[in-house]
Length: 230
Image 1: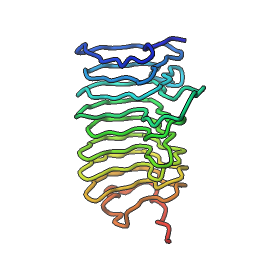
Image 2: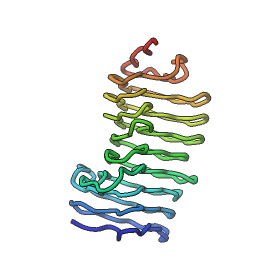
Image 3: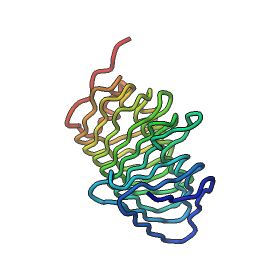
Image 4: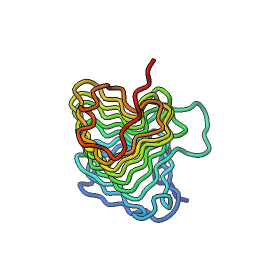
């Protein structure tokens, strides 16, 4: 097992393009986490992300306007100490852009969103799980432009599993939102999504909007469940 960072240090990546290749095993990022402000490429096992595990205390904050993560599981330490933190696994902010392929993001053991983004990226074959009751599996903020392909958001207890705000653009293909306690998709006024071939089922509610045509701009493979009446 390896230690990626020393306790209490936030790593600011100042090299213009840095590639980190991680072999099979466990790596540890200690509190307060990792800040990325320059382009970086982090590569684990491109075929099986469970072989390369980052146990994260704190948050990964991505501010760089470019970057890539592939073949990695990012999760909370299995042995928790002290109060339960209110942290996100990943936050893309300040105009940053991050592309990801074949990763698992698991925020079980923390109280925050699993992932939030106010900018852009292309995410393919990504698993998202572990959002807490008052937060979101994936929270897309105003001006976010994210393309999701074969992304799964599963087993979240949050009120709103995928939540996106005004001016967000979500290109969403072959994705799955299933077996969550809360609303499958929460669309705020003015937000636009394009869905194609998606499965949205076994959630507390399928969507929070009755304007289904504004969300389902491309017919999905399976229609969302009817909105529950109250």
